[in-house]
Image (tube, rainbow, N blue to C red):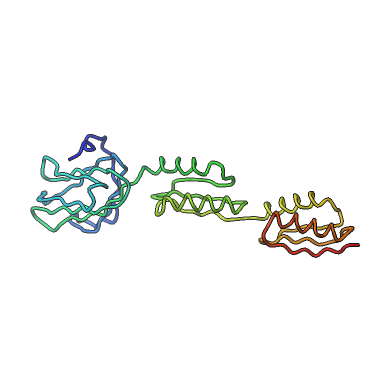
Length: 221
């Protein structure tokens, strides 16, 4: 057993137990790294098997009626306990940081993204809210994907306000009150009149600096 057994005892989460039976297989155990819990073994411990020793460590309790399980590194592993009497106990063990600590890390990584809320709900972390730029949406997607299976991305992309601000900025740079600028989807649409053909070319260049798709419908008066 490694030195991790000396860590503080934490309460593990055990899911999907069959009613009234401690001998059920296919149970789930969730631990934090450096946390230890005791799995009760009513039939007595004969032998302990671990599929991935880098994820968890386990050894029989001195009383012979339990196994001390320690989380080592983040990931998943199978723990199989052969009993002296009775069928094997099989646990699917997940070692993951405590959710509140993980939620703080998600908040830190997304601190520059406006309009979102990060909260713990059950066994998941939820990232919720409205995003106003595609860059923000990409950032949230990247961060939540790094915590795949634990962090859920429930955000929605709303470009309405962002598109209005882009349209205003383009209109200001063009400098003609006879021109109307809109952003529809991912297309910049410019209509109206300008004094010369050279102005049409200048407006077209301004629009193309702001977006790949443009629709320029201008007349030189």
